[in-house]
Length: 340
Image 1 (cartoon, one colour):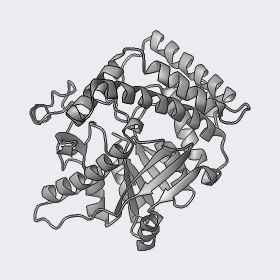
Image 2 (image 1 turned 90 degrees about the vertical axis):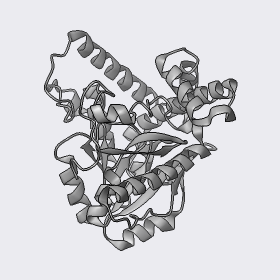
Image 3 (image 1 turned 60 degrees about the vertical axis):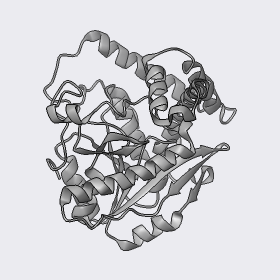
């Protein structure tokens, strides 16, 4: 699985990065250093006793959550914005530390997944709402699994890929060696990766659904894609509209889902499918549909808030910056209608 990453091939091109830029040698060194640290951790995580790597990940993550960083500060700010007075400052601090511990566990679970035989996850995962998944399969018009950065979403993708042909739309990671390793881990479990921002992603997504296959999309981040403002924890949040647009064009089932870590195991939850609303205007239909999907994800997050990635700048785009393209220093962020 890792041979192609050790041959010294040139750095792959990020499909959404724009014109090529010169890469400093210091960044190249950091990329390779992180890569070899990951290789070493992945090897040690396979050694007995079973499960020690996940426990170690929780300890290391918890320690990281005690170090003041920009990410920690951003997570605390997000929690204050979303929960207001429902959480005290002490509550928010504890929740952020639990989030870091959860992320640490997830890293070592991903190492474990890299060596796990396809189909071996069944003993580690329980499923709620399985009838919704089966009913969507029986329709035969394709499934759009709509989820977010909750729990260990890579494990959920691996479980789904053992039952249906699954393609996921994912971000291209800045560390290209780590990116190629992660894509290879997914491929080992039967998951095909499309890159967010690639010109071919919209076309391949449509083909996937029209063949009756399954597409996985995460819509809980403010990214450089077509989007709309919908309520999220009581605040307008710029949210990708691609899932609603694809469902409208193909008739595929929009199936919200997530995965939690509970009592040492993982639980996948499928919710009732979200229907395209019967509204006269396309933008209104897609906005309302995206709002319903986001409400489902918010419900998932509220069940286990420590398992969502609060580090992300979820509210960085405002109506004003979306109009003038200044939210991220460029004009690549678009409102609905430019690609689907």
